Image (tube, rainbow, N blue to C red):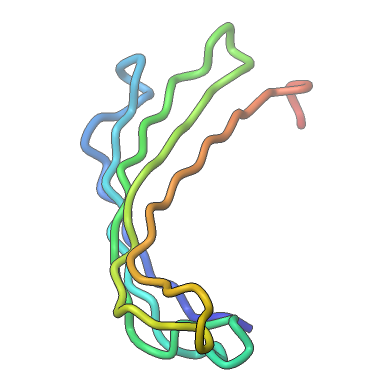
Length: 102
């Protein structure tokens, strides 16, 4: 099990009443995963994402993209290995309605 993540979503623009939706998603993680097994940070971290999504086009397809950052203390995995600090986060998604009940 990795770190527990708690996030909140603040919708700034609604994609049901306009073509584009916009949201801010701040988050915090709690150190419940093992950092020695690379499934946790070993510390509390935080960050946020900005999310942009579209309303359904043609009543079938919608898209979403997000970008943000996770802020944490810098750590070296092992002597001579990579150093990891803050992260740039991004993602994209597409929703396709296959049939009305699905």
